[in-house]
Structures are given as structure tokens and as C-alpha cells.
Image 1 (spheres, rainbow, N blue to C red):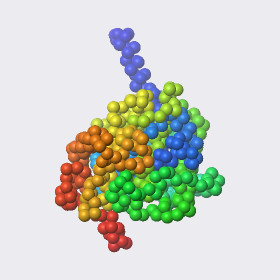
Image 2: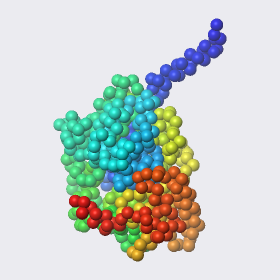
Image 3: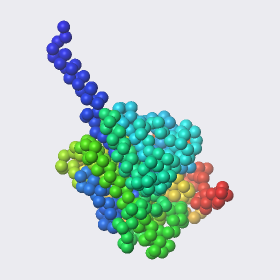
Length: 514
């Protein structure tokens, strides 16, 4: 006959197992992603010219990360990084490079959570192809992982602001003609279906807003009507030693003239940009209302961030890609309704990045972080200001014309950038910014002897991270070359075989292709 204590213990284990299976001890997780939202374009990050009451409230109830960087600040690469928790040189996914291989997607947070019993859903701009082929084109339904989710509301390529133009959310077009609010409606139906399933859920929504074209929801026209926006102190500033010649060699400087051609064009652009963000803020409010109405708010974690920043005219630059603050930083707010009061409304200064999203989501679900992931679980950092050991993070650009491809190291106080390109016009350039005090990056102190020790420290960290890149970079999709291009000891002769084209050469090639 079975020993009573043993029998009791087995019954206890069975009960725990059943609880695990029903998901009663696991939280729901909502991951919300905007497109091209720089951190400062959010009220709770100190900008009183934008209207983001729901984002601000989320920050009051959760944790706001002051130094959240996109390790690659461009949509396709960043989204693959977010899903997999790996740096771009391991995902192999970006424009001009290739798709995310199927085997790598199998270790993404949505797939792992579905395997763990979560009800999963995705809506919005997926943004990259999942394929074992070579094309990175994401404008074909065959390369989007629709069947990997329990419920799908995603779209092709950049998607469309007109709801009716997006196949999987078109049913919401009559009531919500602009996609931002339509995704809020889709979320309500997803949460309702997830509740019926009896499983914990993970819902990921990637808004098109505030990506170009700046065509906001007319429903919010009154919010910004008649407003005039002040420009940041580094708006239009392009002179001096604080900008490398490489930074001014790409489309981020040579195109997007509407940000700087006139006061009228700037005001029109920033108004449309901010109004698009307000539309997402409204959708966040819709989602939180749905959580309350459906009775699941108390066990639902909300993570809000963006895939990259946006320059908005800073230093006469536009777009993203570059490692400067406006282009690489985005808001990150994590709200856990179960957290104690001392973890609500706090700000964390230590650097975080898009590589941290998958590990954090998996950790909330009680799942192990795969060894291939590069990011950190941010939950300890939410609990304590120094909750993670990492003090720096690597920023990379491996896309676009050769001149703007670079590698950088950033901490909460310092940023070191190595611009690899050299020809008769320019030589490899280093920049060192004390971003803790000089957030607008107006003074490159690379040649200031006062900071020689700090420069030595940042170079050492850079070299260590490059050594890791050399060890782990994939062989395919033209990534191996960065072992040479980003090496500070390599010269122009070493690099020349691996270069693909200057801005002017690439522009001419595009003309011929048309």
C-alpha cells in the first residue's frame, strides 16, 4: 500500500501540474510595437508637445526605461531581433541581406509560448520574411508565418493606414477606417477568444504608425489643430566636429528634405507624426478598456515600445538607422499589474535594448531563455535599479550605403561610435559623446585629453564586442564581412573587397533598375 506522505506529495505535484496546464499561474502578455517612434515623442519622456495620456498612465503604473535602444535601428532587422532575442549578425535578417530562416523563427517568443500552451495572436506589420530562401521581400503571404499563431491580423510589407486595404482586419473598416483604431478593435476580439480558450494569451500588435506617409486618423484632427511646435536645440545643427562625415553621406541627410526645407513643411510633418502617435495612444486605451471589460486586466502584462527611433530633423537628419539618440532610442514601458507599489511609476536608467524583449517575455511566462538569445531578462531590473549586470549594449548598422555602416557601444553615460568607411573623401571616424550630460550629442569629445581614460575603456568594450561578433556572425547573407569592416585595426585596402557601394553609386543603381 502506498505511503500516505508519498501519496500526498504525488497529489500535490499533480495539482501543481494541472494548474500549470490550465495557465492559472501564468500571466497574459501584450506586446505593443509602434513603427519609427523616437523616445522623446512620448509625453512621459518629457515632451509636453505630444498628447499621449494612455502611454503616460502606463508609465505611472509601471516601469519606464530611460535608455532603451534598438540595437539595429531599422524596421525589418529590429523586428526579427525582437522576436528572437538575437543581434542582427545572428538573425541574418535585414533589407539587402536576407529573410529569417525558419529554424530561427522556431525559437522566437511567439512560437515558444504557443508550444508552452499560450493562445497567441499577431496583428499589424510583421515586417520581415520567414523563409529558407534568399529573398528578404515580405510582400508575399507565403513568407509570413500565419499558421504559427492561433489568430492572425497581420499584413504584407509596410501595410496600409486604410483599414480596408489590410486583408485580415478589413472587417473593422466601416467603424474604424484608420488602422490604428482598427487594431484596438481586433485586440478586443482576440482577448475575448483567448478567454474562451481557457489558456493564458500572448498578443502582439505592430502598428504602422507613425511611419511615413504621415496620414493620421482624421478622428483626432482637433487634438493638434492650430498648434505650433518648438524644435529641439539640435534641430538643423549640422556644423562642427560633433558629426562625422559618414553620418551625412546617406539618405538620412541627403533625402527627407521636408523636415528642414521650411518652417511650414516642418510643422506639417511633426503634426502628422505626433497625431499618428496619438492614434496609437488611443488604441492603447481601447485595449486597456477591453482588458477591464473582459475581466483579465489584473493578470495581464503590457509591454510598449517601438522598432526604432526617428531623427525628426535633429542635426539636419531624418529617418533612423544612425546610432544617434533620436534615431536609435525608443520608449519602453513595462506594466505588470501584479507588481508591488514600489515598482510602479519608477524609472530605470541602465541600458536596455530590443534584444531583451524575447527573454523578458519568456521569463514572464515562466519559460527558459534559449542559449542562442543575446538579450537579458529585464524583470530583475524592474525590481532593482541595478538588477542586471550588463552596463553597455552594442548598436549596429549593416544596411544602406557603405559610409553609414557602423558599430557603436552605449552605456547610460557614454556612447562610442566607430564609422568604418574610408576613401579619398573621409577616413574612419570615431565619436565619443557624454550622453549622460550631452543628450543632444552636440559635443564629440573624442580628442579631449580629459576623457582619454573613458575613450580607452569604450574602445576596449568595443573590441570585446567585435570579438564576440567575429565568433558568432553567420556565414550567409553577407554578414561575415563585418568581421573586417568593423575592425579598428583594418585599413582601407583590407576593407575594399567587402564594400558594396557609396550613396551616389547606390542611388544611380536604383535609377537604372527603374
